[in-house]
Image (cartoon, rainbow, N blue to C red):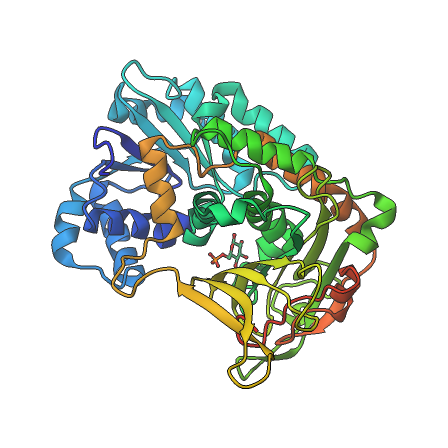
Length: 479
Ligand code: BG6
């Protein structure tokens, strides 16, 4: 479906890195594929005119869009214009004129500390309502630093904007595998009947990166892996696995069910943080055959920093469906391999007629490639009834199929006013509620060291219930 070309897309903070590296390339690609015809207004304090803005965008696109072509640029550049201004209400007057009274999206491509000011400024300039169409506000994670600051941010945004107008970007919800989790679960009859504590032994969600800080030390050293990856991205994947099916594919119905399962997560008591969470910090090591420094030796990182670059959590869901099933979430930087998956471990059959140890797994792999694997058992060919492990594997996409990035998916959804892939505030709040006690405990002490290029700190094994082990990052995907 092509988007509504009447909607004006305003990027507040149009001279920043996010716009340059991610937003503009995504919008350009959508235009290339015939999906984006909306005008894009860049808004920033820089002394630019339309042409200077276009030149800036042009340079970025050539660098960041491998499929860039000048012919598409010719039509794309006609969609672009620039408005200069700061973030107070009176500064937005020029923008008000440019936007008129039709539908518009305001994307805050700004540091989170400015979200409140910008949202208020836009509302003071009455850009939050229009006679002839919807007005939307887009913000991107982090949504606060902890439960209290998330609530402060919510209040600031809600002063001028209704919750229905706010689109919070968690880019994982634009990833194909995240979207497929519910589709696969809820279209295959055989899965729903085993999707519970009776049949599932554990769920393991892993997002392992070989990357280090990538120049983001200022943000990362304040954030750490729990805030950067688990509170939002991995918690969203968890929610999609654990939620009950909504009655309809309507945003509020979906969000109600997501919130409900988050509310069912058993609180982590301060006294049990060590049994429910493990943190690590990488030491010097070797990643992809390259020697890399430890976190504390990275440029700009304070020598005493206790920021975790690896975090793992064990969650219990106190409802009928999941009673007694541990959910494990982990993510880390400078690990052995770029590998990510949502792995569902099934219980063994009640009586092993052909031996023991016949575990089934259903694996939604996200990296290095997207695929669904099922680990099953069958008879080994031959004269005796031996069993052997087999993998039923299907790549997620066919080779010739188009790949849309998470940003492309989500920007189009914003334009179309589709709120399903954007977390509602109560989901964000519940996710903070879950991790807050861990953050508080981790304000003291130090993370465990792990060598760069390893599978993370060995202490992560202490989270495992008896008979359950982490899946290895280094073996073949479905081993
Ligand atoms: C971001 C985190 O939100 O997600 C990064 O801030 C992380 O630290 C990234 O590397 C991972 O997502 P992707 O899509 O780049 O694999």
